[in-house]
Length: 230
Image (cartoon, rainbow, N blue to C red):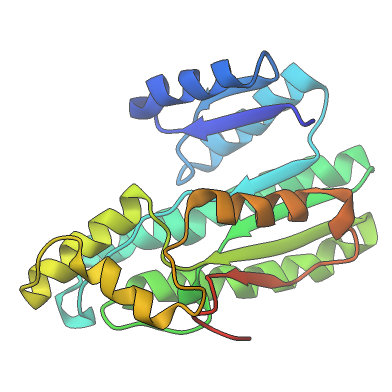
């Protein structure tokens, strides 16, 4: 029931257009680089111009580095910070300004991770950014509460996505195991007994974007099949 703008880098334009086509006219494809504040501001402006306002921002762009801290390069560290943390900051700030100006409340939702609650081996850069997103979200939730705007984080576990495929390849390379085996090995630590799929995460995001979550703010909802208990 929402009009949706989908954002991604210019190289993903074909995927954006295909997704918008599935939204039956209620979607807008916008090229955006979350590391650039001006690009994010322009994306929000494009959405408002098309649909008359903004109600929900989901800041979910992310990258992952799987490497020991001593092997993580300065460039990898900066890229991870730029996308996972500064990118979320830009999305939060642009959305907050628009939502406060409108005066009708709203939802700001950030992408966390189980790695935002428990650091993992070879995940120093990634975990650092995700822990930071939780802290920033808790602070912003307090700042925006008086405006009726909630700020929450969703924290997935091992999801069957291209990002996790790349993590599996990196782990397999370091451990000398077959590609695919590292992800499958994680099943032993998932009480629900299966790997996560995107739809498992989408349901939680939909809840956080809905009226049903009006009294939930400053929280990080872990959706990982039981890998980590808060």
